[in-house]
Figure 1 (cartoon, rainbow, N blue to C red):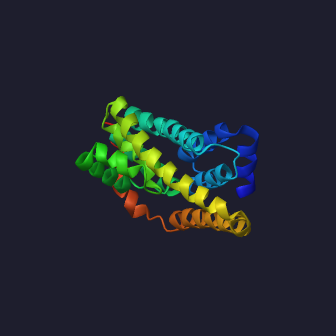
Figure 2: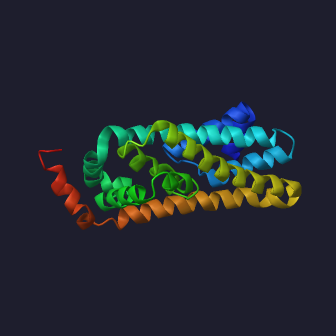
Length: 212
């Protein structure tokens, strides 16, 4: 998997980093925990500047959360709950998950976006309750940008520092990246297999309500 990331970065440079981070947020095929350290790793070898790597990763990540914001904004809490009730098994998202995310956002507001952008799995989904709550777009983008910049910078610096030990790290990057991908796939399969229809019972009843 790291070979794919390296190839994209080699072919498109810093634009490739932005593209990968955009895709990671829209539909996470490759985690940012792999993308940004590898980008920092490349930067340490002199192929890209550290600033451009962080900037591109931040911009790509920021663009990737906007569609989720508008999805929440357009659908609203009831329709998102209905969507989770009907397709929760494959989304691994129950109506209760939607409700908890909304409650968490209502309690913490902009702080939830700021720190949520730095938490695995939460980084993308925190955009949904922000959209549902009709959080002003400038505010959403500001806090998302700060949170994304902190996250991408941290991962990039880790890769940059590891890049100083090219021979040592090179032997581990491939196997570690494969483990990360397998772990993500395993977690998804586990959540699909253990998804309880009872968790969606309330959402199913809501989906039948004509008010939706």
